[in-house]
Each structure stands twice: as structure tokens, then as C-alpha cells.
Image (cartoon, rainbow, N blue to C red; front, top):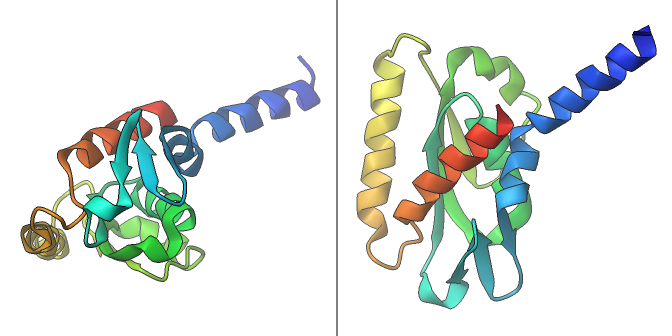
Length: 146
């Protein structure tokens, strides 16, 4: 195997594991609705859209959602591993807060972030744009990225 061929394989593996690509493979939207993993959600059915999450791929997944939904996102909070903070300098989000937290050992920052996520989910109400499908979607996109 040549060095060129090895680099091509390596780049293909990185592209297949990209969280942005994984999200965009599972989520699409048009002017009226978001389609997540085959399920259609009309924007008119929600007062606001919040992005809530946590995990190693969380920052890049939030980036993908913000690119896709742009101004439709009201706000959001995503707990990300503390070491990811170096990457956060390169990820500029306007509507979603990326909150560094301990990983793999949970710390007080992670507890604080989890409480904030839970509070935001409670505040959202039935038309608040949080839905159980979003948790499954995140797991599927994350599995796709592995």
C-alpha cells in the first residue's frame, strides 16, 4: 500500500466519523418543517426550538444544527468534555452555549450543566421544541459517526 493510498483511507475514515456530517445525514429542513430521522416536525407547531445535549461530539453536532436551523433556534445548552474546550475556540455558535464539563470523571461543572439542561427542558413546555425524538436522533447520529 502506498502512502497516498493510506492517506486516502485515513481521510475517508475521518469524513465518515464527522459529527457534522452525521447530523446532516439525519436532519433536514425546509421553510416549513424539520425532518429528523424520517419524522416531520412543522415549525408552526412549536413556539421555540432549543438545542439541548451533552457528549464528546456535542459541540460539532450543535454546530451542524445551528448551521441548518440558524435563526430558528431560540437558544441551547450542550455539555462538552473539558478537553474539548481547546476545540471550542474554533467553533463559534451564536445561539447555543457550549459548557465545558468533566470527562470521563464527572465534576461540578457537569452537574451544573445537567441541571441547566433539565431546567431548560422543563421551561420549554409542550410547544417548546424539545422532543424525545431528539435524544434518539442524537444517539443515532453519534453511532453513525463512530
